[in-house]
Image 1: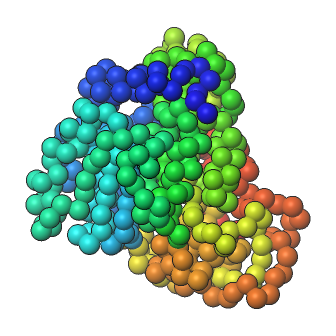
Image 2: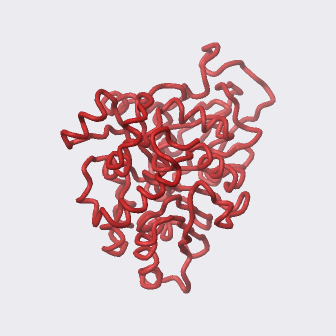
Length: 369
């Protein structure tokens, strides 16, 4: 399933050349795609301040897919680049956790590896909990990554660069442990791009030409086993170069942070009502008073929130999900009350919604499904 406008080999060549040789820092970018993200939360900003300067300057990303509350967990970063997000997650998982970054670009890997020892000392760890391996995100098996090896997968504006996005998503599902999550930011489009746009090398390197039509992405996610894709944040991407704007025409691009949970046997294709509710304990660092699961689930500490079966599973029903220790879920599935919200045929969590422009999406958080 290679990109329509470019062969797989050519795609790899363009990406390696653009990120290894053409770009020196994020200031060299021609669009906002690889830097289009809202200001990260305070606790993330504080963690970024501790990241070595060279690592941070070489960072290209379109979001802040950096979950906290992950102490002791095993994290994988797909397309880790200079390693900035790995460095942050290294601090978040603690000395008992581990972080692996995988990337195919030697120049980026050199930067990522160069500061591991000094950063380990900065954190006060007795030994590194972070490592970087060379490989393609489509072929995690060839990189030696095993089934169910990780609790969390993060990725920042990289999946769009893959010539085989379906395989990337399938491989992510394979290496996640049950209860794990693929938590990542990437670039999406409001339509399927024509082949001539997909073949544009600069737009491809800028994370535009490889952007998936959002609805096609959700189809691939569900097919892989991520039954109920949720999005957390969304922001518009601006193509500032006049010549490139002419190439993309009326297509609109967005940076979206998605949350894909691997909860076999618990997620359903529709929002089902079992009379359950969830209570957030306030135990996730950086989220003492409130936690946003996605764009329409806002959990205030200590306040019971009615949830559908899928949301109950995501925040800890049966103790499967990594979030379970941070929530109390009350109720089980012994009694079924029909479709959640009493809307026959409504898709799970309204997840087939097209992404709204940021102004419309900003106020969508709600306390119930």
